[in-house]
Image 1 (cartoon, rainbow, N blue to C red):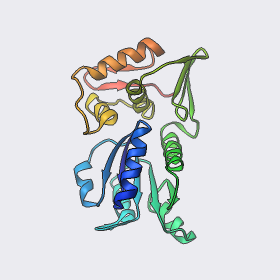
Image 2 (image 1 turned 60 degrees about the vertical axis):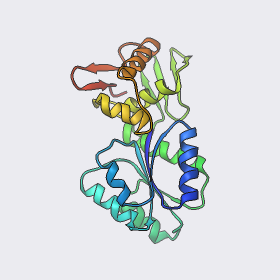
Image 3 (image 1 turned 90 degrees about the horizontal axis):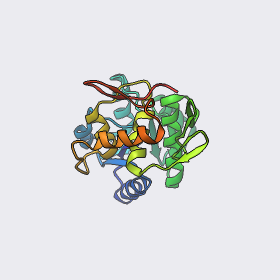
Length: 218
């Protein structure tokens, strides 16, 4: 997944960024609300939003995104743990609420849960005929047989599956897989899509000419 992490604490932010990257995610880390302007319009699978930031409220920032029609799943992270504060956070557009301190494993699990709910209901196992994809386990099987995927192939597959039924343009797919951190060969996405079709079946990923790629709804 490509994640936008909005956290001003340098130690916590750096630790979460590095841990999530080690888990295979692309992480855009912003320390202030102003820094998120560079990310405006960029595709993200989920948001991790601190409530209190040096230049304003993360909740106000999230409310503004919701008013613009942005439905990207969001997990609020904060030291505020009163019931009324939890309710306010969720009512402000948060899909989940996590009180500091927390283990990064729990944040990762909550991110998987909110993205699953947004993409295809609450199920983590999705099926297309004899193909089954387990988003939580990062695993794919065809006819009950495990299929080995590279980290990059899984990233491409996950980006498409989380948007099942929608066309994902090649530029957006490149950003979801790598963000701004690395250069991608001009035909890299085509190479990974070709490998996925070979391993999982040609019918799974549809090429929408001139627009991008699409995985049908499970």
